[in-house]
Length: 353
Image 1 (tube, helix red, strand yellow):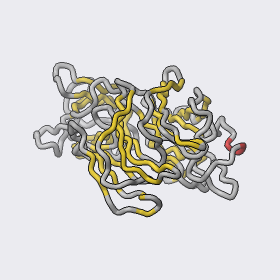
Image 2 (image 1 turned 45 degrees about the vertical axis):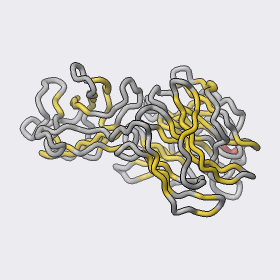
Image 3 (image 1 turned 90 degrees about the vertical axis):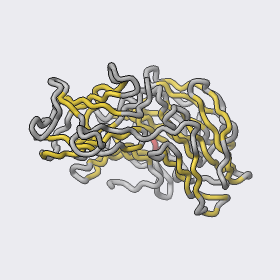
Image 4 (image 1 turned 135 degrees about the vertical axis):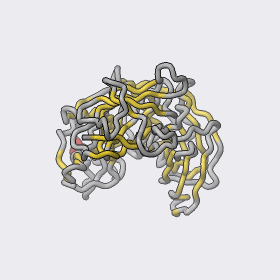
């Protein structure tokens, strides 16, 4: 890396690069400049400068900023000392956007979770006291608006988007009260938080991972300052499995049922795809009407998503149209995977020349 970062944020961009933002380092705890990691070159490079002058603020370590990838491929950054910016990968620039409702998250940042609607849920955090407030960032309007309050203060917690569109908020650390075991569900339709089952132990600074079977693994973290080896499984009311890609043989492996959008012919070794071409395929388990795009990797490179939504004439299935990226090594069995909400599908293959 170019600079020194502690507790930075990392966002995988739709062009395959990784944006590193926020964090703090050094005696004055200033936020380092943002960087881009290019996996093809294996190098880090400086991005365009922040609009916010981060040298004016004394940020606390691990609280420099919170960031999240938005549905249109830009990244929203919420700074600890107030203000928010958008990073545009296509122009490598930061621009100011609407301000969060709290003037500052100076003692701890909130969680930031992209919802199926394309809005971003910013919840919890603290400034002298712990916030129970939550807000929604609307990208088209570039504004923040209040939504329902959390049931308790949340800091050092996790927020996990579930396949049904709800958000699981788990754990927290409240100064003077210690770690807690409670969990809430945020319903974006009702705009409200409701309690759900408690964890088996109090915890903060833990991880929460949506599994391929639809459950959420909550693991590790701190219980009142002591690391815990315990883990919990959260079971949503409805289990939604990871997305599935279809294969010609019907077994989910080998030659994929992926076709040239122009002709409808399968992209096979006898009719290989080429860079820049548009391909189409069916999948399962994408959210109906959701605005969060899937990611499709062809030979390890991300393809550009052109369409995702209901498959015409096939209720319950989804269609994804994507462009084959350049630089894919040619072959008769090039891998294709679809990732959605952090969960990967099975691998199928296509021919590429």
